[in-house]
Length: 414
Image (cartoon, rainbow, N blue to C red; front, side, top):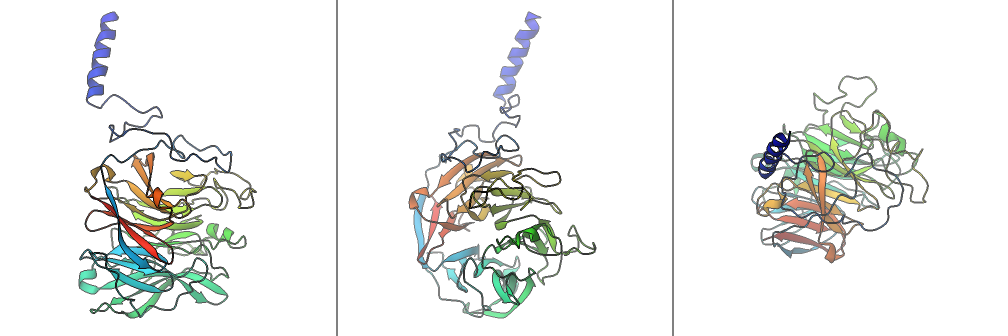
């Protein structure tokens, strides 16, 4: 028996040296970056609730710190309440301003003139011109897609527009509305409005539930497009293999439901999965792995509470048939735009998820392994500014834009 113990110990040492024998204390495989030091959680403020997470690591995970020495520079200035941005094929950045203007930022940081031809937006409250995406075949067709708050009967709605960027880049030609998230509602809050491309050239679009108590239940109703992730073609039609196609009384464009105010969508660079971030109320900001046809719970379950301090609904955080967030924050960071880092300029960031924090006034870095968050870092916290969107640039750097009237686009790179 003693010899067997010695042999077992030797095998354990050998396997551990090869990185094959150890697992973390919560049963997950060891980190892909075992040299990254684990620090105390970055959040030190007390939570708003005494809710218990559904599993270990769902909130307040250990902190991590980027070891690569990077530089933060002010890449561009003078933007007016920017909201969304995307790369053009030549490395320039196309960016929206909330009041209804698009601009192009050159590779040297020069801010171009206003691009006209965009239909009128309702820019009051949280509305306006929101996200922007260029067609995967933009080089050939120069098509641009955007989300915005559309005026209509009885209020406003999240809508998707498209048009061609003119050769001289001064205007959008033949602009049209291809999709409207019904019903219109008399509110200027919670539009959602983020865009992401699937692998087949279709658009994911996030919509908010419009915030007010009468509208909240629409997030659970499948005959309404509020509080949803939808998937449409570039003509605005439902994609043929959407999960509710052909089911009576259900909008065929719905992909998932039960969302509050989802302002972040991003495709994982290796798995192709869709990830989403959404703002909670007082506590309960979420990061979700989006799976076709699933219910993400709002307003039935939440890790947050009302701004007045009372519970959301019955005050429960779990219910059968409703998905749990992969990660949540309490207190909130108010996540808006998100992106996965795919480059190797800062190699330790590869496949990490970055989120622009509004009330948090920083950029969040989440290290994700096996669909679990295993580390969190705060970047640009010293700037004291609200961040609206993040983007990996064509040069491999990370770009983060603030949302004020004289906003700054920061570059984080070498």
